[in-house]
Image 1: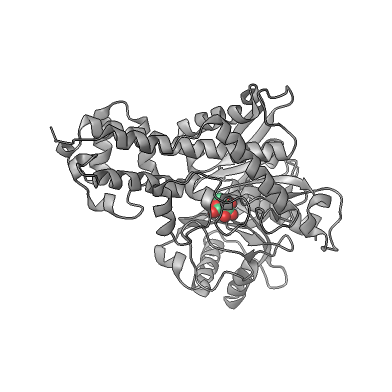
Image 2: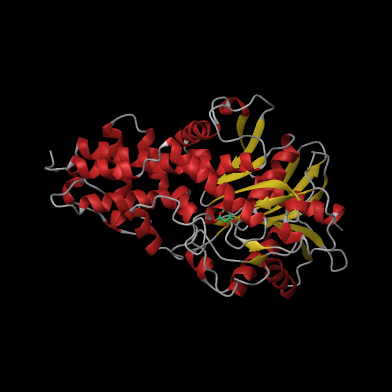
Length: 472
Ligand code: BGC
């Protein structure tokens, strides 16, 4: 057996620093609510609360054929989506993987790659357009943008590890259209929507609506409809009717950003979060996202493991590390799910041997238990913070209130997407528990999380439908 002389206090202290008691959840939820309100009022200290210019909620009768592009973090997908007007769809897809070079190179190279992939997709599927009758294209783009119409989307910042050069401050639909035009591809970009808005639209088309859409994947964000009359930023938009609602993209991943004057330092950051920030592409930004989303949870856990390995005497693996454990992002969030799904300490050890290159003789039972406790602590904090954002959305829209008991009432469907929802069963359970702690007993009976798979392409098609038939 290895001779790990672990100091249980070090581990206990770390686990404790990740715990968020129920009353702190309420405080964080109140702060997020405040940030929603400031943002909707156009105050730059609030969250972005970006108007999406999506003003009509699908009811399943939408019909038409649209090309779509859905940008995810590791790949983008070109599709042709056919809506039959009876809540069904069919689609042909092509997935194009993105290399690290694609994500950090020049914008022209990036959009040339996208345009070439669209051309390839059209050729492979025998789809033809013409200069006089270009094919309408809807885009789902999960990054913060400023919008002045359903098509325009000026990139505000990259997130989730992207840093394509010379794109920030430019309109994404223009960059894309220029590339398509340069290559004489008869396709016209008609809409650009955030991925949360896309999920909202997709869920509405497929099964009759939701009150909130949330993504807990590589990044995190939420969107919900708001009265146009209340969105102060839109008051100078003459073409827009002031009645009705519009989907607002909260960009809640930016909550507690260092750059904002109010609502910062609300989240209890640990040294492991600070290290993550310092080594990230944009330290101080996407603060909430960096504690909640799939991209970062494994890295937070890795920071803890390395700290414990480096203790004197060592508090983990007898002080042994491996190249994977030493590398930034060397511990994938997926391993957290494997550790939590493991049935025994022996199974946890097998995960560590297989994925981190540790030698089994260097992992004691105590080490395996520590790895499990750290995994649970990091994901539980993520799920509890996620609950604050969901609660804030539901309270903001008047569906629930902060307090000990949720009122009886209709079901509140929340459309969700992302790795934490799809791959991590405990995440959803903990999210629900924390939500109940914030909005009271009875919440579980009211709030239904509905997984929307492939909502990016469908949502893009529905936004293209709105752009070409309703807002034309
Ligand atoms: C982006 C959001 C997006 C979210 C989920 C965040 O990093 O800023 O626009 O909705 O990730 O993909």
